Image 1 (cartoon, rainbow, N blue to C red):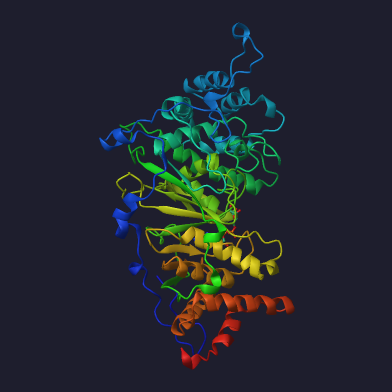
Image 2: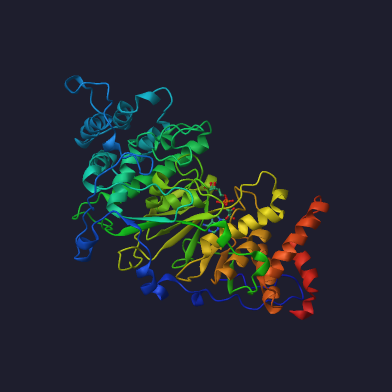
Length: 526
Ligand code: AR6
């Protein structure tokens, strides 16, 4: 569908670039097959002969790798014979109890607190209780699900047999793991077993990483509406665990058995484009006020309107584009385990995640709508043809701050880091940085178009039901392309606009009006 109507009387817009002509992953399947896998957590020789087993290599406990719960060292001061159980022994004891069946939410709480006693005065489980009360026969049966989740968490030492590198800042590094390995890591996150990950104070060991243990998702909220929203989040999470713990004879979608890659991309500042010198015109654009990145953008490079801490508030109360995406595709949540916060010249690209759920509504009106049976084809590495790029826009305190050369350049670079690379599938995006982060829609749309031009990709832009914006973007795109305006020229105008904006910052910013004057635009020229 397209917005393709007239924007203003007298200005006739041509048809929107048809979405079916935009390039998608499957046009590029062989190129996708070659794409970097990075650090692979399964044995590739076995994989090639059709068997999925973990790759073996000695574990380490250091600051370059994820501190896995089963490696937690025994305190040295104890002599062996009188030693209290290690944290993992305590964890196994508690989780094994849960595998025996018929568990209440209270039992889950008792288990989690038994090896997290430091937090006994801090953690609450109200959201989990609320979910439990509502549940009955509606979605999953917790009585049978909790034991399977506990078993999945306990399987970690058998599933992960080599260190998982941390994707630290300014490193180009990728991790590929099986969906089964991810599910076990997430089961551990659910039961809050990851050591050293509960302290988020500045200066703490993992202060630069997102949280991974789910304790914050279970916690109470002052506002009852927010508590309800957490109940909806938990429905999505439990549905995911229900799917990944399926027995082969169970009905419905089979247990996932593919791979997923997580790639941190950092482009050194010296290799970023000089925006004063980019002589290329804008690329094709499909604009639509209907549809979403996740659905209509299927097969394209889908933009995650990210937080620099990947996943943002998914394990708390956040519930906008990124969080909803992560709840529908919970495999994305595992990125929080190993992805250090993104710097200005970095992004995280995820290839192959599966979608498990459908949702409806947004933010306060969000609810879990039901299961989604993902039939997206897989590449030779058994990754779904779905690629997501997490780019974090500037979080603006005052919207006027965005009209500076530095901030515009920062956003151009960030978008470029996300969009560059192969295959050159179209980008599916929208109002990046313009909701929670308060950016100007017209400025951000132009910035993304400029970055896409330099990265040589077409774009599908979903305005999230904003018809007026769809018309505005379509019109300016048409004027710019008809007049062969190139990226360097637009950059120059943006800088001029910043100067003018600084002088007259009381007036409403009309960027597109300013650009039209620059082109000497008259409706008859279109
Ligand atoms: N498809 C297309 N457009 C969408 C969709 C969608 N599925 N969802 C939302 N929009 P926002 P930000 C539009 O606020 O400003 C999170 O907490 C809609 O118009 O999610 O970059 C992250 O973790 C919406 O207002 O992105 C960060 O902390 C606009 O896109 C922070 O929010 C922006 O969506 C990022 O904030």
